[in-house]
Structure formats: C-alpha cells, structure tokens
Image 1: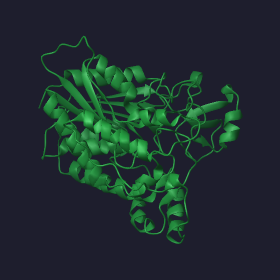
Image 2: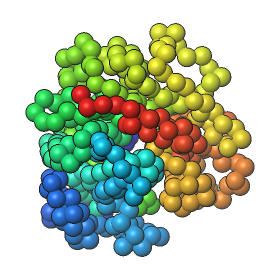
Image 3: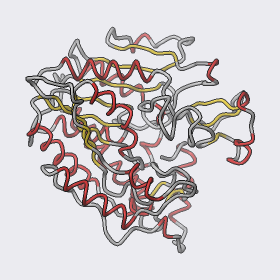
Image 4: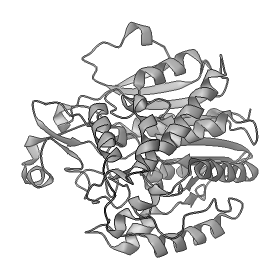
Length: 405
C-alpha cells in the first residue's frame, strides 16, 4: 500500500498524464482469474486453487516455484487429534490486500492445537502475480468470504470470522451482514476501517486506472506478498472501505463480540478511528483491544478504556523502535518473516537501498513501521511480533469463551 499521502497524490497525478508502457509478465493480468470456489467442498476448492496457482503464479527470485505455490495456498487445519468436544468451533481468516493466507499460518497452528478448526481463503487477484490485481473485483472478494464463511458455519457449532487489514474490513462486512449465518465473534488485526492519510486520495484512483495499471511497480522479492500496488487495488479497497464505514454508522451499539489488535505506528490504518469505533460502538464488556505502542508516551485520555490493553513496542534490546502493520500476526519463528529467516532483514528498508541495508552490521539495523521522515538510526520494516504468544493467548481465549449468538 502507498506509504505517504503526498507521495501517493503525486504518483497518481502523474499516472493521469502517462501512457501505459509494456510490462513484464509479472505486471500483466493472467488470462483467467480466481473464482469464488466451492466452500462446501474444501478439498475441491483446494484442488482448483492449486491448479490456478500452478498455471498462473509468476515466481519471484531465490525461492523454488513449487514452494511458492504451497506458501500462497489457502488451507484448512482441523483440530488436533486429542480434541473431543461436544461443541465444535471454527474460524475463517481473510488475508489483506496484496497478501496471502500465509500470514495466518502461525495463528492457525495455535488455534488448531486448542481444538479450533481454521480455514483461510485466497482472495481473487492474489497469490500469483501483481498483475492479477489489475482486474480483481471487490464483489468477488465479498462472495468468496460469504461462501466460505457460510460453509464453515454449516460444519461447526460456533463459527467465527476474522481478518487482517483489508481482510479485517471484509470480515467486518460479513459479520454485520444480515443475509447469512452470524458469527459468534469477530477477530480483526489492523482492520482497514479507515486509512491513515490516503482516504482523501482514493477517489483519484478510478480515473488514474484508465491511464495506468500501477501506482508503483516495485521489484518483487517477497514470495507471499506483492510489493507493487495496482491502481485498481485502490478502487476496490475504496469500495470496501466505504461500505464498512456505512455499515458501522448504521449501528449505535454493536453487540457482536470483537477482538482487535493494532499498532500505534501503523502507516496504513487510522488508529484513532479504530479506537473510537471500538469504544463507542463495540460496547460488549468482554471485548478486547490490544495496542502495541511506545509505553514511554502517555495514552490519550480521550482514548482510555479498561478493555484496551497496551504492549510495549519500543524494544531497544531487539533493535525495535516500533511495530509495523505487517508484523502483528507473525511469530518470531515464522519460516519466512521470523528471526534470522529470509525476509526478516531489509524488507522495505527506509531511506536506504536494499543493497546498502544488507551490508549493515546487525547492531546497526533497527526495525520499525514505514515512515518517510528521518530517523536517528537506519531501519527496515519489522516483520514479526515479539508479543506473538500474548496475542495468540488472547485470541485463543476469545474464541474458546464465546457462545453462539
């Protein structure tokens, strides 16, 4: 997602007067798109999705293509063998924009060990190449979420829905919908209920899309998340964003149980809006919000709520200045983003080239969210959550204690 509003406005404005040039296959849409898929037959859905990835995934360097297909696949993890419960529980988790179901692998492992079935879905346009977001459609995303959540709700006694970023907004839409099963609770990580800075510029994307497919064409080095940003992504994101805000505004109070996690330094979502919605609309006393922030700074008095729990995001012993949007769901031992793993260092370095970042001594590279301002030290994006176990514990407790509404 574009990182600064002034930069985004400039790039989109330039797009309006720029002619499209030929792009390598990475930035071109495939001849076919993912369809909604059959949620009632998850094995068939996996088979069809695997074929789609095998036919259309354009591999990034340095990782085997076969492994990249596996990482981007949706998945279903059934409860551990020891689980014997009279009431079955399950959750559908929806990934974010430009992301993939890989983002939920760590939480899925924890939940399945605690007797919760986990299913994920691969949103249209994702998991193959950035070019596929040029033709992706928010209504298809909604249909995918509806199909797979309704199928989950048929199969388990107490169903939940959750998501990260865009997926959090799509999960919120489904949780507040009246045309299908209702979840027992909503779990959202940095949900895109309102953006930080870009909301005033998204309207330009509809026009820019006529002239240019991408706001940014970045080198693709991450096998489970796009770095490039398609102009159409902004159009579809705006559609979801506006609908979520309209839905929220229709309720004075929402009795749906909710667990929210966010970071104060998030460069993508508007934390103030998120806190205000949690405090004023999601009034259930058992709701929880986890906020990762610099505890050296006071929490605004107007944001105080006994249901909001803060975790320190300034961890100098780990060379961490603050937490990024992307880090929330990732365990420190994650196979790609974890400590010492291939994507942990120099993913989106700030104000330094990738080459120079990789040459820095370990003690000289710090980790943070994305910012386009000077910092006292050189940083790259934090890829994992040092408080992952605490978040996983809160998530597990939430899912295990809610009853069907």
